[in-house]
Image (cartoon, rainbow over all chains, first blue to last red; front, side, top):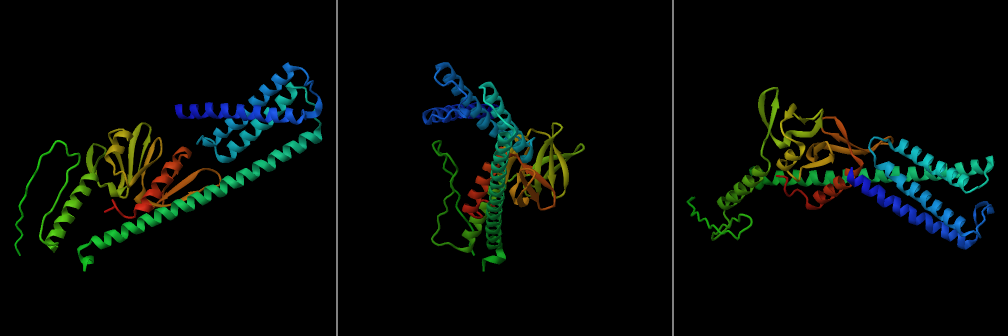
Length: 157
Length: 164
């Protein structure tokens, strides 16, 4: 449990740093979402950066869901997707972003496609890993069989 | 054929592991048998039978017969090729007695005998499934997949050494 907590803390911290970094990049590009923000106010800039950090924490911290054995991979994926989507809406609402149905639909579709692709990649990686493990297992067992047959007194001739 | 040998034991506190040196003018079949016996003895010592219980009857089972050992309702159960037995010690204590090459932990509650594993399968709905020779199966906890994979990779590289 302690190990999971440590990992969660590390990922939250990493996500926070990455979130702030992405926020800074957006500021430097001068493209605040929807241009609804008064980015001339230092307080707004700090608030948006903090929110970007928190959102990054939610996204990266949420990846630990895949390590919890109680959750199936599909359930973990759905919860993670909901955290990311919900987090984005909370972030947007608190910063005064304006959403319309089309934007929400596009956003959801984009996230959904991204998650399906990640999920398929993880599944194929898992299958590949199982294949590698089976190959190693059979290689070891075969070597053991050879060794045993060599060690039998009858097999020494 | 003369089969007498001289035995000489040197006690040296600085020696970390016992060492056996056989001195002979040639490697005869007798010498080979002796080497095999010593090797077999050390292996037997590593794979001591495990004390288990069926009710109150004590049963010694070979490590080779064990398929999986798991904790259920705070009881340690050994699933073997000959049936199911209870073990009266903790999983951690048992892990120290089990052969380190054959047995690997797949979760906080379970240790399996790799020698009795038929194959691994990655399930679409869950994590890594391990299927045993008797057709039963279990699951490798996600955080134990890497250590299990590493162990298999090491064993494959070493070949059959340590199996005997």
